[in-house]
Amino acid sequence: MMREAEKPRQLPLDLGHGTGYSRDDLVVSPANSEAVALVDHWPDWPSPVVVLAGPIGSGKTHLASIWREQANAVRLEGRALGESWPGLGDRPVLVDDIDTGPFSEQGLFHLINTVRGAGSHLLLTARRFPSAWDVTLPDLSSRLKAAATVEIHEPDDLLLSGVITKLFSDRQVEVEPHVVQYLARRIERSLATAMRVVDRLDRMALEQKTRITRALAAEVVSAMDEGQGEFDL
Image (cartoon, rainbow, N blue to C red; front, top):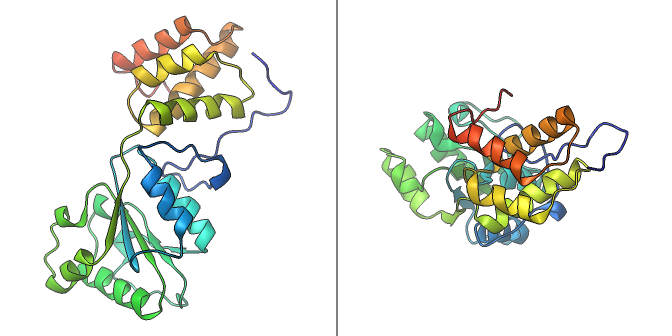
């Protein structure tokens, strides 16, 4: 295992903790290619309002963070949509995880109209498509039906392998490809889980003063299978 003397550089992969991440380092696979294309093609979007939908751990917030920085967008919380937004102007807007809690339907309707009127864009990320949000306001329902929807799927083997490899690389840790493949096939299909697994393996290897082997990886995966998925973090 090779490591620089300085403090290891943590991969700033945004999974809901507000950290940024470079588009150049983004791992792309069929699972997220359509969503990545959405970010790459801004501002040439098919609609002023776009919904990026996908399961937990698929990287929605990560991609939204890249877009937010690229577009200099304003981030609003779903629970604050009923409030005023002074100084919004024509800046694009991001509302992340809008369907994870209650939000003001009237507020979202007003926000959509404001963005459309300014000739700007609104990106909404969610676990489900708008048709499953149980919206009761007819005008908002109509606006959401006109929005463009892009699906991001749970990570596939290619994406998980790429992310795990990059996580280790950013820590200056060398891991054999067969160990990476073993992890990608056996851990929960979540980028957050990949981060926790890499962190735990790195810690264990340091504590035991050994390389990260398939046997060590199996030990961590076994702990996860036994319900210890948080790895005491």
